[in-house]
Image (cartoon, helix red, strand yellow):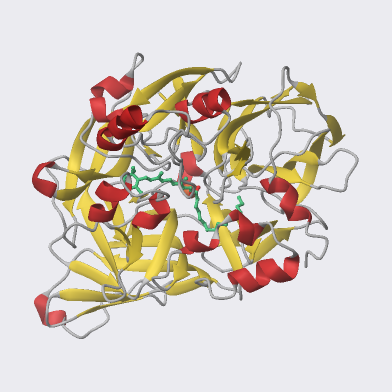
Length: 524
Ligand SMILES: CCCCCCCCCCCCCCCC(=O)OC/C=C(C)/C=C/C=C(C)/C=C/C1=C(C)CCCC1(C)C
Ligand SMILES: [Fe+2]
């Protein structure tokens, strides 16, 4: 598919811009589409002569496409995180990133090194994963306790916020949910006093000024394994429930706590797979007086990063997920050395990685002891099953919504404002071939029909759905994706697709390579 290995370019360092640059438009940008597309990703893949090793290490770069009156400009700035500022000052990796260790400053004397050793190293504030609004402010985030307030116009870094000051969590996911009234929910690991472990769901109520100050933990879910909470990247939310999937990818807390004293260790060294637990689903009501479902939902092992959507229907909770089969951690395959090789090497490196599959799980809400051994799912439109076992657990089997050999449907998006937590039809995603992003896919989750946008030597990013104002159809809107086409005269463009047919409406070409972006927000 990619013998020219053009995808390497999306993993190379770029400089930030001093002012927005104009884009050259082909096609017609819908006149109603006025706003900013904000996206986050790594932008600097080495500091001095020290390379970053993992796809999630590069220093955070915030990107912005401004759309106004059919015209488009592009701008980008590095986040002035402590990771960035100190790296620039000392010309070396100073703060340990996800898969790259910082080594002690060789210039420091033995005494100051001794003190750093006992104070413990600093947790990274390299917010490269997502950017989203909290109240009227915008925050760039990773998955630690540090988030960074960013000016969405100038892209300037405004302040670093430590979530631990407001909430008892060690971090929050980069995938919050927002209710219609603006309430934000998120989930994070909490390593409490006495080594008690929990997954805490937090609520940030809508407020004009500093909503984070009013945030609180609303639900606490215990970890099923002592000292080893599961890694969590996103969660599900319906009108009345939170869905938390406890996956066999574990954080070994003892390793994490001693990590900082081991030379060369990184966050990646704290993870391990549990090869016997399979995967557990937990349901809790959103109501603060809510409960944790007394039934344990189980299924075979998979890695989970992205929930697509979840909703309630006829006494069931339907949960659609982008899964990776097995307990082997997918992030083990995302080292830059694997992703930046020749095409044959990239394929070889991805060969043993878990296989992707889009799956639908159906969790019955009303469970009776006398139904033991029977399939409890009687929804007309799904083949997913849930069988009650004698030990009270419910074994789930999914319905496969999309599957292709080493063809992932990842970085999923939906018409979030209208269909979050509701019965829906369409998911949009980034197609990955052996982890290389090479197409945009639309999936009808009811019929399994797919539509594809693909172009030779093009490397797109997560497609964000923006609804047409006043739309009545679920897929009436556009998809926005940042595409890199290394050989072209202008090597990157903002792609605007008609979300119904996945046909191109317009592209806005810019004269610079835009490195890989993970997630982002459209700010109308
Ligand atoms: C867009 C194209 C990408 C091309 C290649 C990628 C292919 C990916 C296929 C799989 C999907 C995976 C999606 C992952 C998305 C993502 O954005 O992940 C980024 C996650 C990051 C940077 C996580 C950082 C987490 C940290 C630093 C956690 C730290 C912690 C611990 C490990 C334990 C203790 C608590 C604490 C400090 C939070
Ligand atoms: Fe993500």
